[in-house]
Length: 323
Image (cartoon, rainbow, N blue to C red; front, top):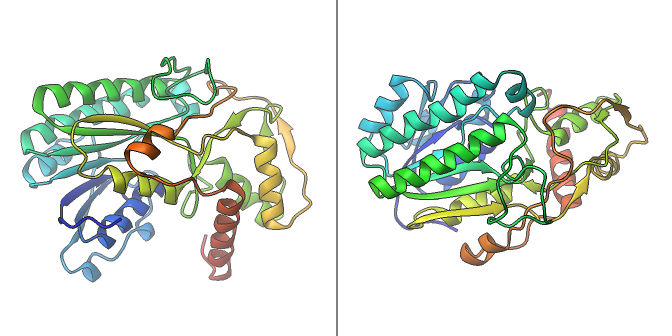
């Protein structure tokens, strides 16, 4: 899915789990890539060598809410802003609502104002296909489902989508909001703020017992990071304002997910159960059919295959003495 026309792309959160995969894809497709990341959760090891890219890649340690990030975006001559950076810990958003809003809403507005000043043509925005809908009225949820988030994190993503529509209308920016399901895959940080797959997988491979919050009947729509990359690639250069769900369209309970992971690892360790966490919805499943049709995307990687790929990647890392 290579793009014939080289673009200058700024990726926020590019050292993170999803962002770093996008950086690899944009470079592979011949684009010039600049990363902005404050490294609060991202890792420099996720990124390619600046020297090895022959001037097509640069890295800046910055906060997205800073004047420095705004200046870089406004003066850098970028064609596209790929905005992946966020405070994405739902539990922290409940505990510190102001921090969540400061990073996700004000940080985004800082970038949007700079993008408008700098003549950026398109924005690809990492939204959420779970938290944005809240407790769903229908399953799977289409993009037209009512937005009733039950966490400040979900509220922040709704606000950002509305700000993006304003900047599309006021400044002519092309915008695609991609509402991700529960993304998993290589490079997801098991010690970070999100990612039950990575957390469970590390514990199982270490021979430890994972804890399932609540009764384990809560469901999510799990999507492999490679499918997320495909959606971003397909949306690059798309004119207008668009919102697409990026998921598998399949509900999987935490108990089912755990069983799949235990099979992939080859362990008989049984999970323990702990109290449910505040701010987490009971069921989540999104309908990806609109994006598949308009972006010509294929079916999602089957969950068991994706979990096996992820398990194999973590095992290779461990055999090399890496975290």
